[in-house]
Length: 170
Image 1 (cartoon, rainbow, N blue to C red):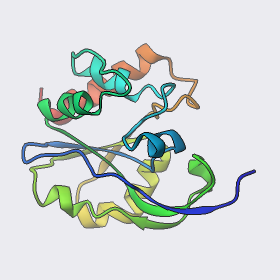
Image 2: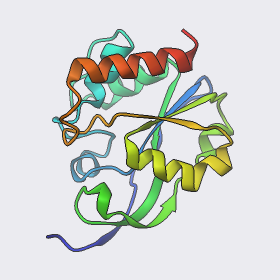
Image 3: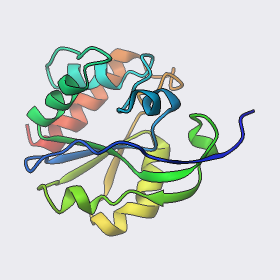
Image 4: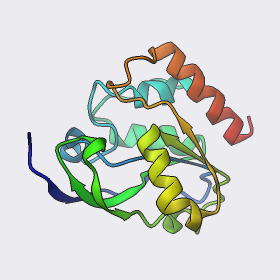
């Protein structure tokens, strides 16, 4: 098993002054850190789920600009709960020595009215570290990770669509 390594997040959040919903993951995977953008593992269903839930085409894996446009066009901000931590590989279960993200960077610049967490780890970490700062409760959604095999892509998409449209007021 890999040793613990202290790692900083490594890339900026996605948001603009029109972002109304903040989607938070826990911490970037090894592949995401290598690709320097969110959900860089092609097996992670995040981009397929978001595109389908928002009625858009799925951006290519390497199309970071297209992914940003997809989110921002719909008022969605994206970041992670953790700014840095000790972690083994990509294992959320191994996370320790958390330094939470400065979400005021987003909430101070955009009218965020809802927070959606991608999976239980992000939800737990948000409640512990960030909810007292943000002042908004989060809805924890099923993880888009390939490790969450109990949720099929259509079921996952429908659950995320419901939460996103409700949060966006559509």
